Image (tube, rainbow, N blue to C red):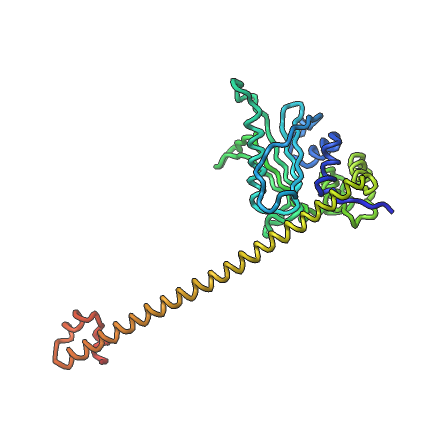
Length: 304
């Protein structure tokens, strides 16, 4: 029985998509919102840019960068866990790719679109059922849609992704099923996936037998780092939650105490005012005068 590795792991993801450009082309053409008349035909791999490291998550992002013959740039990141910082990280990398297209003296008309693709093995927003999120620059207002196509970000949430049926043959769905469903518990890959030659080839590259002992050790280290980073993140979350609860309790006590003191002080003032009004009333001072002096109502004075 064949054993498979999870294609979401750094070493497997890069073996599939970095070493085999035709597989990356098939995948990008399937999942990106590209104009139908302008598919990716060929690509050239680009060196990875230096992007800021995300605290805690240092090893759980696999990235691939390339451009096609039209000059369009594609940045692909496989992200195991999600924090909002990932969105800024992908935006930063895509923005760098925009800026570095032009050399000194070149005109802006030469700029080509940059697509940043984040494949997330986690949930971004639990309240939003959508799994495909496409960001681009669009003019606000009614009327004709005016879009700047040069910077686009796409985030795909694999846990939310569910094809309507197993019979669906759309290439996008089949590639995403491959990324979501294949892992170390997989003993047999569905026929509908293997019917696609590129996905069949990618599946072969996830076989454990395709890796050396050294590569398998790197694979295990990767998942160890994922577990460690998850634990650290959860620990920080729990610590922050406990600290927040403690601060909330302290704030509540302080507010309660302040409110109690203010209420007690006001009650004291009210009693003093009533005593003064009562004394003036006993001395025969007109009620209208007492009202003016004490700010008590006529009814309050009469009841004293």
